[in-house]
Length: 112
Image (cartoon, rainbow, N blue to C red; front, top):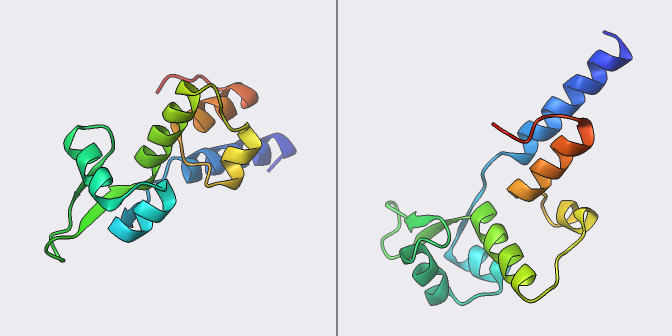
């Protein structure tokens, strides 16, 4: 493989890793989002974040970490603050905004 082939492969691997979905239980999601557990369930019911009742544990919920992160980023932007790309990567790097930014940096189309 040439250096160019290795660079392309590394970019594809990085993009795939960034697009993987991760789920959190109610306690983990509440701590991650710094939002109360009841508020998280309310946000799911409003369609603001992704989540669903855990079928294995009655009364428990599972939440999409990336949807919580998108919600937090939107709230930060509403108040005029937004973390830098480096902060996003340090704090998980799992949102669509980072993926688009990386695609732009490596010259790939932002459209799927």
